[in-house]
Length: 398
Image (cartoon, rainbow, N blue to C red; front, side, top):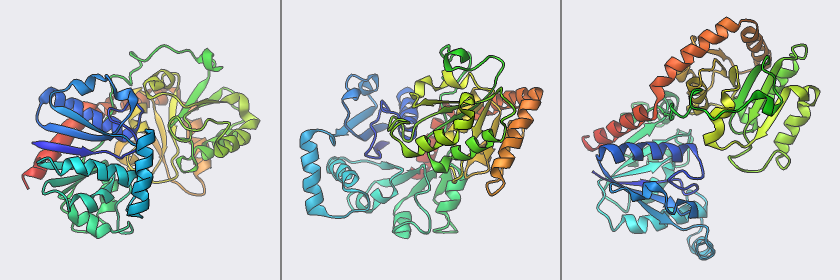
């Protein structure tokens, strides 16, 4: 099968700048490199760091780069904005799509995969006879979405990352037959205590006897980090309960000193400043070396998480989990390895009680960690890629 992949138009593939979606694309491309099932061309934004990358040597996976950040391309983007006006997305994304379609029109693709940009289909459908698949990672397509029915009807298949996202798509067409759930995966070998780079608690000001909670992810309101700080402030008498906060507002974006919300968080944590460590942005490859220092992972999301990759990463590191009952998270966790909390007025009280429960019952903590490790094996990148490729094959057969 001859396949084109239309990426987001923001971060490059291979995922040399990070990005959950981009890493997941890399996983199924790596699977294709081994099994050589399809001839795949990836349409991605250009980036100087991709030059010389080993993935570009593939005979079955090809990369077509659209320059969007050079001086000349910036001029072209502004010209595009002047003559094309408003599109479904910002003009920078629309420019990337238009430039990609110039090449796609010249190729005879059997299938086009659109990564998370549902609105792309409004232009793609009119310029190709190929079947189209939406790989939907976020809650971007539901009954209240812009042009929802037109977008839904134009796709041949919609692959979502969780049953929660599938249920949201089905608000458009309740008798949906297009959606299939393929859960995400991670490199569980990389997220391993045995293979993590050595790092000591002492290097972060933590003691070997501390009970260390870890939060990892973007630092913003919807992720529930403010509620976690509040819960920590309720536990002032427990001096050896510490919190490790890993992340920034957006990948390698503004640091804590520049981001108003992070500044506000630090202010609210000032009464317990000796018990909270803010690491700032941590490169993805270094995350296991920090996670291995923890006794428990806390995922207090106050929005509806589409999937919850941080859950799987914590599970692979053998950590018990305290999490909000949010979006796709309950699909991943079980009562064997996690304490799930209901969002709402009493969330902070529930959170502090759950923390104390695991702090006081270390044997329970260890049992839950062992259960996490076993469950994580269901979320390997190999299993994810194989399931994704099966979903693509079924699309051509319908």
